[in-house]
Length: 299
Image (cartoon, rainbow, N blue to C red):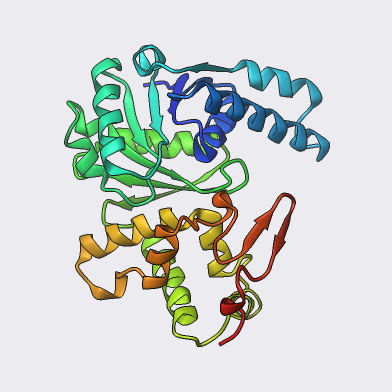
């Protein structure tokens, strides 16, 4: 099967990034979202990203318009998926929402269409189970920011066929990404390793071992991490971190995955990181202030 037309469901940070990289490799892309406002914002973001790439001499000026013309937008899933060879769901990390989207994708897509999800932790096998084509359901976990990060976790569900998996591995390489095949267990590889580290950093803060900047500095300078774990949690979104940790905790039943109470409280209070303007750090337009609160600054 040759993939030429790709539909991306969800125009947020991950969705518009996925749409951009496919459009930049000359695929026909349909970007779908329930919100016209979200779609307009997504196209503005993609254009700004392409202009930034041009300034860095990564693409030609003419390429900006060419790539943008490869993307059409829609608020209708049935309309968006009818000619798709591959659909990638990139909605919020909410299992009920994703299951409902997959039911609609499955209902309106052609029988040969592959259904993929950008989930970072939710079971591919569970999602595939509500479709009529579990052998054609697969995970494509892109990293944020999608145009920059090279990794794609390709997750095989229990019923995913080898043909589909091999095709998605080759497709990911076509996008100039490095695909890594993993099996379908809670958190896959990336978040099974990353989220416990982030959670432990939160416990280290919660128990008064060190402050926010101290913890992040140790990991950046001592372990050569580009971001400290608390800064990274803010970047990911504390609500997303909590959702993934809950999936790990429920999936394995091991107390080591239990979310830190500080994380639970912060999410309950609406302190979600960069997207809300405040998390472990506070965020103003174009700048970042350390720390978010004096109580986080010292042991």
